[in-house]
Image 1 (cartoon, helix red, strand yellow):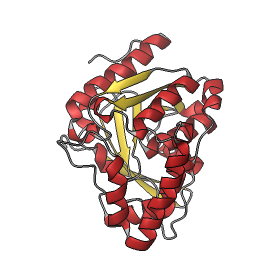
Image 2 (image 1 turned 45 degrees about the horizontal axis):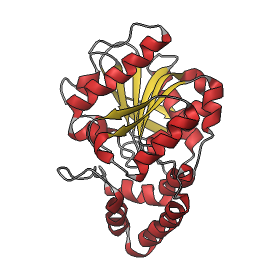
Image 3 (image 1 turned 45 degrees about the vertical axis):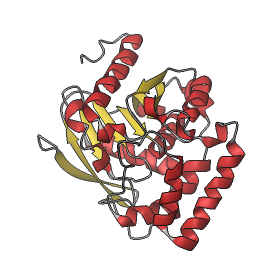
Image 4 (image 1 turned 180 degrees about the horizontal axis):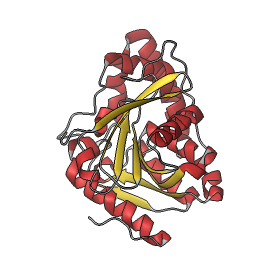
Length: 276
């Protein structure tokens, strides 16, 4: 990643959150999913930085943002962590791009703390409770947790990845540290797969929000959820390049489409939008 970002940290509710920023202009926070490590966004940062002060961070209990006593993920607390980063950078609000489990956190952010949000794009958030086959995914959640309990994180991850679509030419995004995998399965996976924020409140809050799916994701469960989300939120659904983690594997093309999406949202609000 070049040029070098600026690294910093901020304390939030018993955790020192480590984050890094690149660029200038309005603030854009990139929220990582189940892996929890901000480095998954390092490849896309330089392409977003000409248009935004772009921030990646390690979520609570992940990578650099360790805690002494890990606890089950609280989506509202994780939203407050983002607010702490926004304030530390001297901003009052931010736009947010969130992938996968990070979208669950960001939906909760839009429910509970809408005043801190500018524009939001949630990419393939796994709100499986909305799906017609939700019972299958509920059963599969506990099946995967049992695999983790009896066989370990590698076996659970391998089984989980059997439902990932569009990775014929790429590897599925891997975790930066093995400890992240254990924290994910012990403290995050259940919330990310069965917690369902009340999307109707986001509409009531008037948040500028859109959802997005990857063109290669096809009928993957995490892409199908975005159709249901779009209907409840009464928002746009963007089709972005690639698969579930194409922001990492094809960052330049992904960034171009993401910037167009944010620009369109700003123009519809009456602003100038983003020049790409």
